[in-house]
Image (cartoon, rainbow, N blue to C red; front, side, top):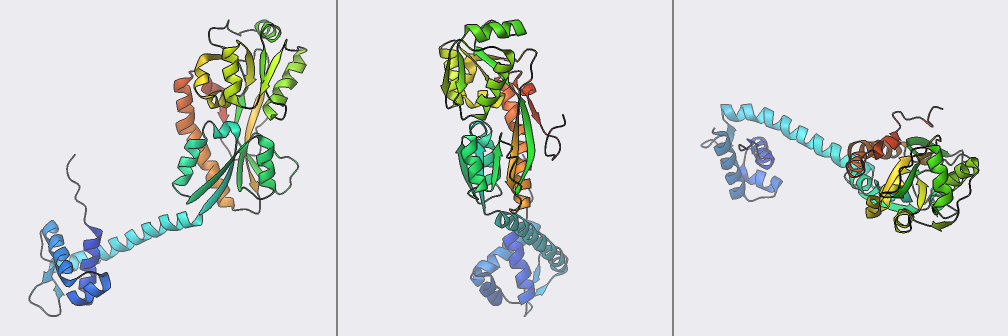
Length: 328
């Protein structure tokens, strides 16, 4: 790659100041350097440009023709440079702190990517993660600013919410298990293999149980645990099965490579992930988190998921508009 012809902005600033102050001594005081350092910077700029900028024999210092041409351009450039710095710094000052709540599956999947993206423009991102109901309570009690959660918070009038994405639940079985491609195969799985579920306070468990009741089937036996890592790990270890959203599969870490996954034959079970905040809070901050989350999902996370688990991304649907729910 060839060298870039970039002008040193400090040298430009010194040049403009010398042109305005007309003496090296006054410039040195204003810039905070010695007169010798000022002279060396001017000489370096002249060498870089290949022209003489000041009449050396005049007192006070006067610009040459080339110096006058550069002076007007340099002031414009330095002003634009200041505007750029101010724009970036003011944006950062605008968002000093974000208290972010993440559901367990979000924290264990795309959470690190999202936090990294937010840290580029927010000074401090404080994250609370865990089960849905406790972090919903944190939002309602003003302990967090923005919440990413599968819980819709329908009964709180002060809460504004938007759909981020929707997931289709999938059947997860031990790798190498007979494919679950029909309703009959699914029914056989339910009555023959142990079901691994989340604990009873999990919203995902509530949805999965509702589907099983609609099928009129009761699993032969089951184990309930608190994390996706354990759910998927036990599916592999004891040759069981589970019903989970695809992001939870990714949150299981290395265990996700020891299982296979299938759509639910003849049924549809979905989980909606919401972004919520109190209406009295900073609307711009809410929109920032929304836009960054969708960007991370579409450009980074789903690409990585699909690469590691081919076919998984078709079960995740990012909301294209900023609406309060999916069209039915």
